Length: 300
Image 1 (cartoon, one colour):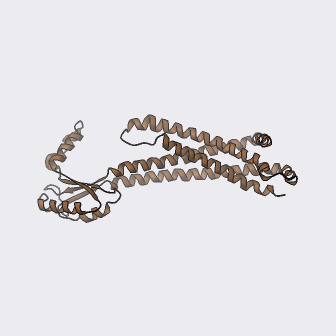
Image 2: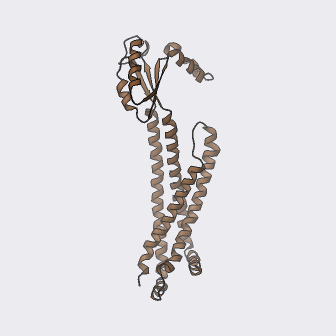
């Protein structure tokens, strides 16, 4: 080990500039990779929270609001309401059904916007009776919608998936774009590590040949090179971990959580998983390029 450490220190001093470039590249790429992991966990938390709260709301026809399933200038009849409720309750995708009259809807609207000018924007006559449907699985809603969307008395069906799905699609695209960019930078870091080790082994080719001739093992010869690349990668990983921890504390815990308290945000557990992932990737990216680059020099 004394030989390995002394040779590692010597190699780091000789290739200081290249080692620093490897550290910086690893730092940036691992930070982006960790940010992508954190973003993925945040998207999953939001999906789990928001999708569980999704309800399908079926608005009924009124004299003022018509539609293809509505009789002209007429509210939905009691018979139509009964048929619609029976169809909803018989659907296996449905867990519970709540009927809300226009009076209840108007009271809820006034309560929700009691301190807002919006409160006076609607009158009681403009409200609609509705069925609010809680689903067994919020992701399974198409069967219910296709069953009742053409039934008499249905003015429209409001499904929050139409709003949330595009949002999550863009969030996922941003998340995967971050990971893709980090993968490219990690590839560049791996190539840099490979080039550094190749240069180091080339300059010490004569020494390596002599060690092989006198019976030195591959582990003894490659130890300094592995330590050299591993130290550079771990320094980059530590810097990336510090960046991720500071980013989560400053952006999420200090600002986002205080501004949007109703949203479930990632915490230290998710950050720890992302940091662990970056450290594992750093170790793999330091070992594999070293083994590949130094392999040809281990033959006598």
